[in-house]
Amino acid sequence: MNPAVTVKENYVFRQLYRKGSSSVQPCFVVYCRKNKKGLSRLGITVSTKLGKAVVRNRVRRRLREVYRLSKNEMKQGYDVILVGRGRAITAPFSKMQRQYAAALKELGLMEAHR
Image (cartoon, rainbow, N blue to C red; front, side, top):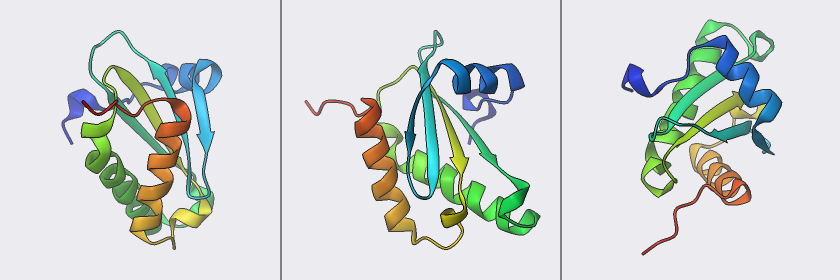
């Protein structure tokens, strides 16, 4: 993923947690907030409670891929934070995709098909 479209700064994460909208799913929590950049950015956090580095990195890669595959259907200009939960370790990828689509619909981030 292009580094220009990722959220890295701690203050942005804190701002999204405090003022953003959220949707809780079994595998992850999605936080979002409109930004002034005109393009969407992604941030991912996975707690050390989920496991060792190998497990956490696998969850991060899966979450990044879920976002990448549905990026074209999303509205642009939003900061999105995905927080991995315990079930993301063992859940099938197709289930994660369905949950992400449900979260986007709940948050109103799905682009209306023309």
